[in-house]
Length: 219
Image 1: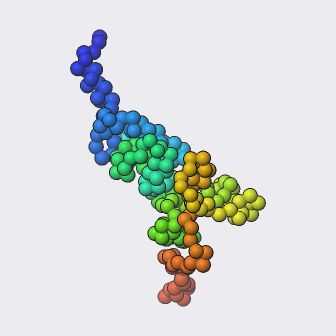
Image 2: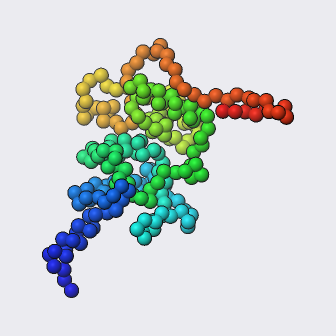
Image 3: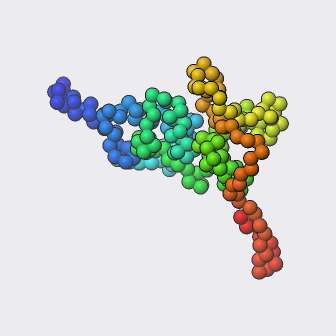
């Protein structure tokens, strides 16, 4: 049994009208939808869950949940830096996100929420506010100043190759495709005076005496 031209056109339109968060994706966005979906399901962007109950269902379509490894803002920046031909807005990027790729909850996190790591993020945010650094995640910064962020020797500055490594600075010349620094997607610092001192927010721990005389640390 064959299809009429009208039925075939409806079928093609149906394939391109993929339901995602925020509504229906238009036919002109089909290719971008495929690129974004493939990007979101990469292991360096999201991680798969293993539990049988860790699924997401939408329109009777059940998928295994994947958890984002970074915020949607940083993920959008990563996408735009890798796919220069598909520089889409943040709102469209979120709308094209596969429904089964979701931000992790506190119970899903593989990283801690400790004072040390939060304070490091405060310092990064301050550099961004001063326009010395582009918006970037701590994980991406580690990639720029270490050989391997998963190696203890690199993270504890005992690695001979990256112990004294610093963030590269932006070139003082115009953009050059043959320049490795210009084309690098790793974070770079803008020039600043070495004796400049800035202040940023940070968490501090203090002890409070309880009614029973015991000390309790408070953040």
